[in-house]
Length: 87
Image 1 (spheres, one colour):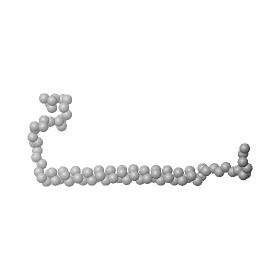
Image 2 (image 1 turned 45 degrees about the horizontal axis):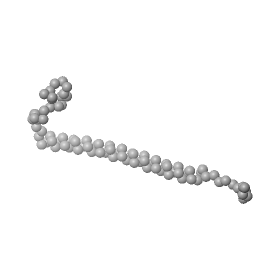
Image 3 (image 1 turned 180 degrees about the vertical axis):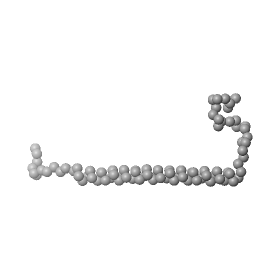
Image 4 (image 1 turned 120 degrees about the horizontal axis):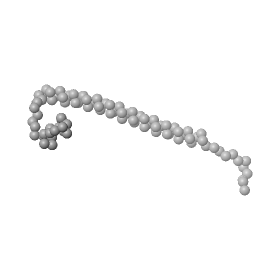
């Protein structure tokens, strides 16, 4: 009774129901090939995202290193003295 009525989506059914259509071996193979192709596309997309993120991170690290090198040389101020001591 839980799986009947308007509160249950159409795709929910009893587990005791037997599938009404059986797939042939050719259909199963075709479905598996289609799924494999979709997964390959998804994998390529994920690899592209990973590569972009790694490149972005490498650029950030290089920028930090460049900024650290620039900070060491440019901002150093040397106080000039005439050689006498202040007392």
